[in-house]
Length: 321
Image (tube, rainbow, N blue to C red):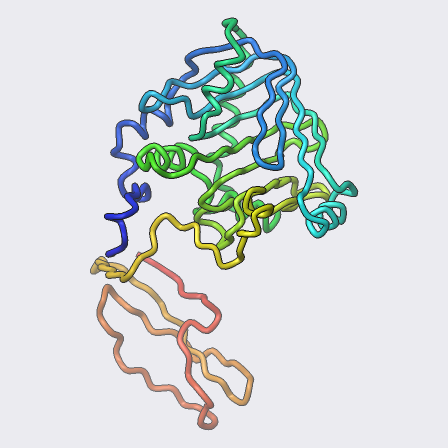
């Protein structure tokens, strides 16, 4: 594949992340510095996170920068939608035009100056064993891939294209001129999986083709308030009237693709054949494709000439080895 990678360097984690020593160390990093927290306020676009009291710990720095932190204690998250349309939409989902959530645990992932901001206000070392437990639980939860998602939103956020926090961080670290992002995963008292993102490359990179950079998501397949509560452009874009639905936040835009595949000689794939008789779809049978070879001709007696003959009409190709 050829793209504008010379202008916008990008790490293709699908193929190479597992061999990147920094990526592996981040995936396995334990907590390093732990600090006592008291009344630290993090303002990110329309959202405000207040860490009232508790403890916070950073994982080991990556390329000399703090990128992941876990918090236990008392916190509050508030967000006021910036347009009447967004406020009305939020009210239709939650009954409120703004977010006000108390939380007792949080995971922060960032490439902006969040680490510096927290360290400037928190100086006293902390020793809270709950921090390590919280980090372990968050990693297990966010790295889970469900075979049977219980909602469309769960499928979107836990599918193959879901977040890889360490990969997201490294994309920023290896592109030092790119604007930093901030993500918060909150265990709220009313909503146990509330997520807040401020991502200049798009709130859902790799998952949704959306130009908006700010999002609040409530993941709760058993509740009636699950959904994307807020999806908007950055406040600066809104006030300057530069927000646009045509905005392209992709890091790389490919000019051309070249795909090379190798099919094992023992790969056996029954391919179903269907015929359309005036709107009635009838399965005629299946042909076995072995490796990359074509099948032998088959003879089928038909009652009349079909409008069309189709392969894999119901997407029901089966595989056997």
